[in-house]
Every structure is written in C-alpha cells, then in structure tokens.
Length: 116
Length: 113
Image (cartoon, rainbow over all chains, first blue to last red; front, side):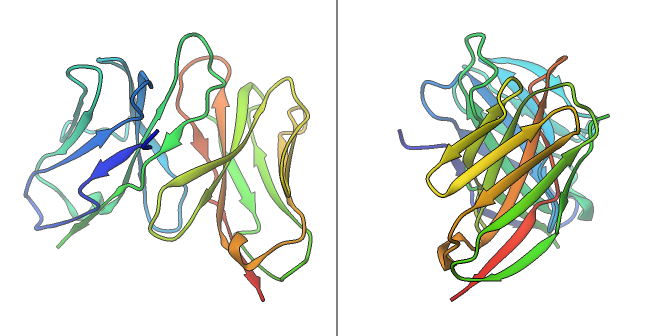
C-alpha cells in the first residue's frame, strides 16, 4: 500500500493560465474524491468518482473546473483560466466501495496551487 | 445543509495533559463521523471512524465519542505528547445520499514540552 499520490506538490502560475493536477489512488480503491482546502479552513468537497463514472459534483466546481478518471484508476483535475480565488490546497482521497459506506477516505498530501 | 463546527479553533496544553476536542453538527442524519489529523503542509490522516450506530471508538491514546441526538462528537487525547501537535478535523458523512464528507474548520493543537 503506497498510499494516495498527488502530483505536483506545488504549482505556481500566473492568473489566466490553465493547470492540471494528477491523483493516483490506492490501487484497490474504486472511489476517488477531490476536495479543496483554503488556509485555516477544513476541506470542501468538489467531486467524486466511482470507477470511471463521475457521480457527484459540488456547486464549487464551476465550468472552469473539469475532472476525469478515464480508466477508473488515476484522475486529473484541470482548472482553466485560473483566478486568484483558485489559490488553495487541492486534496485527493480514495476509498473502497462495494456497498460499504463505512470505508474511511484516505488522503494524499495535496497539490498547493498559488496564483500570482 | 450540514454544518460542522469545531471548538476551540486553537488549543495549547503542556505535555502530559489529557484533553478533549469538540465537534458539533447541525444535521443528525449522518452515516458516520470521522476524525482526521493534519500536519502543516500535509494531507489528512484518518484517526478514527465512528458509525452512526456506535457510541465510541478507541485507538491507543485516542477515544472518539458520538452523540447523534445532540449533534456532538468529542475526541479525547490521553497523556498528550509534543508529537500530537497538529490540526485535528472532524467530518460527517450524510446518511441520506452522497459520499461527500462535510468538514469542520479544525482545532490547531500545540502540546508544549
């Protein structure tokens, strides 16, 4: 079990640029989640996948945001035309499914996005 | 809409002290409640998960309790150590639908040697 892996750990970009983050979940986990965390706050849910299907999306996920999980393994989160307010830590988590909602979510170390 | 609140926002205690962190939630229709630890610049580490049918869970020096009817959970840390210094977050999973955790704002704990 190598844990949830996120890449890059830190991204600095200018306002208006597009950015893409990658998440590799724990290998046997079929659920994958994206959260956003701003400084001093708890994480806020963005979206979640079961296998390759995107099943839930938060209202926080504006049309500038898109997430994919094409083969049900790794996932990408893209932000287009970044804005200052997008500066945050983007956290990925994964869990088992199979009818058990009491499986804990395991988190990666996140990607910190800084918009100049 | 579920709201989760954690009090206090920050706590500083001397080493060896027993302490309690509080978490309250507005909607008692939860499937489970999870406690996490977050070190600076890092992701979240799951500490304890309490199912809605349970009253408490224990792991080592940690004990988490859940009272759904009053909308409260507590995390008890016994014999605190400097290595316990971190932010502690609680999160509720709704029972009606969805798999999104709703988090509190966290309690920043500092244990002084």
